[in-house]
Image (cartoon, rainbow, N blue to C red; front, side):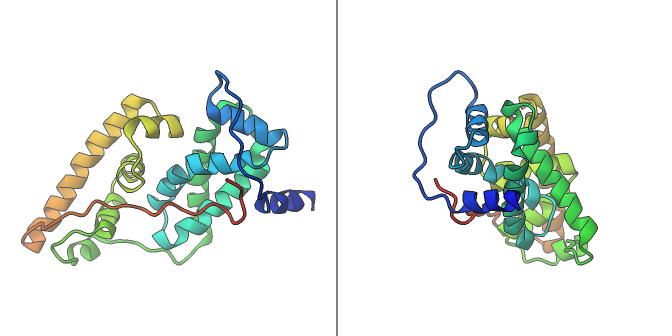
Length: 216
């Protein structure tokens, strides 16, 4: 009951967000400690910083129509479990793992999932749309598709992906290089069957709205 009330209180926050005090600590650590000390409005800033990453991780794994609701669920879960985070500087890798686990749970609990088969991909018209590119990305190995979605759908830079997810910059560079190469090969194979590649539109994913009522 107390946990539910705490969540409700967080959702009803209306006071303006106040900037954290200057410190040598990473901003994530400052925000996490502030939330744990009772300043729940600071969680809105964590949401703003990490929602694109969580959105991208989910988009690489679950049907697009399910992503926004799952983003909300993950951040509410993170707020309730924030006290279990041992290292305040590790908020990014921590919530990234929550998102990956939630995506696996989604498939365990849902019997109706959307699969994009090779045949579905090649039956698309020559002009590659953002959704078609996303469908092809989601057919790549998991490590590559997550990094590519964060880069090309969520618009994060390589250094941002590394900082948010906890991956090393070298790993991100390798995943982007190899993943992009595989994606181009898939697009090329589809283009040959289509009779021409046409225009490729860069996919841009929508930024999920913050949970209702969270102060900014």
